[in-house]
Image (cartoon, rainbow, N blue to C red):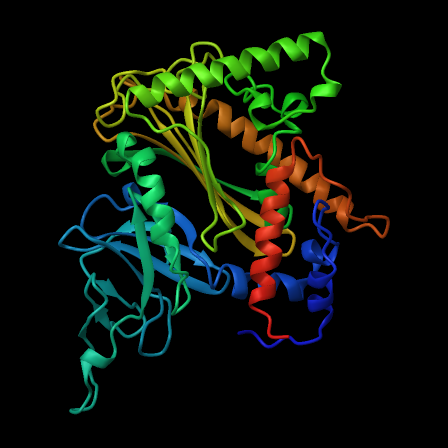
Length: 419
């Protein structure tokens, strides 16, 4: 347990009002940011990438979480593991590039050399009684959920990851993420606190007037609406969506594609939500013409009209799986008012760029949407710094999932505070 008894943070947590936004310090305070990194990103399972990031033995990827640097490495047996990127000699970082391929892990400082499994293989000029077996790289807990990589920096990770994984397995298996490749990836620094980035993702209240590209394939009504406030055209659109949702779920489930909603956003440590949603137009993908972006479909899928399977995890990810490609998103805090949003577009590993897919078409919707969301996050961050800011009420129709995120965050942070 963390020892922060009777501090202003404890008082802030205690008086959090459900159904309302968080108070200003949660978005601006360096002290709370540091606590977030330690008590949230240091204690719970966080999404960091995909197996396709390290497709071959010797491939490695660096992920930085606060001051902690982690190596994601595929070893000679094809297994993916996670190691602390800290030499056991003098503490130098070993790998400095984001991605690369290595034979062994060699610290440039004094050439201490480690195997891909983290075992120390070579350390020159050490004493006769020096025991290499006691100086391997420290391991980090890692789990691959059908190719989605989650790490936990705690020595005692939450035990309910496997419960979530078992529930999600039938949804994810058809998309065969392990046999994909990263067709494109993009980092975006958002000028806002990481919780604002997450809150923005958990609602589509803002979609209709801010995301012209996303709302071509995506029905904003899929994320709630106020029935009394709809005009006649809106009611017709909502009715059309509800009918399409029911018909699509029935058809997809008959084909063996689980589609119904599973929601445990704030009643599990490894909180998650999933649902397969129909898409507008041709209903094939998150593209500007709603048609598939890749000719080669994922796994053994033959029906391109599978809509989009949404999968969210607390505290830092969301994903969309379609018949032809998948898009993954991870959120990593940088400072109290800066956040890294990392997006990856995945296609079948045998798909050929320029033949089966065009990168610009593949990424058009989400690259534009990310930029627009980044701007909105910056707007909110600027506003919450003002003395005039006070938490406002969430919409009961369209922001219930934002409230669930805030509930998860507040309760988990409180659980880590002693007193």
